[in-house]
View 1: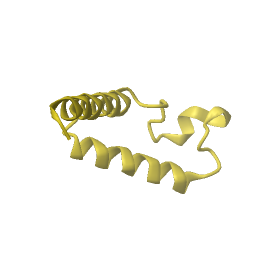
View 2: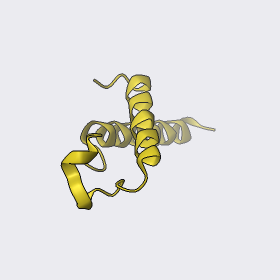
View 3: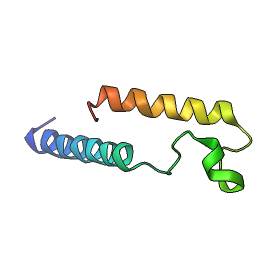
Length: 68
């Protein structure tokens, strides 16, 4: 790998990092974990375990990336 390849790789890694941080801060959805608040429009309505896994995953990523 030459210098150009390393710079390109660094830029791509930085862009991916910024995208992941943005998604974790703003979220892909607005699920707050309060299933009674959404009612029938909640996409996790029938699969509470999947929603809990999703929220745990988001918390882990936030902890890894130091997002508060």
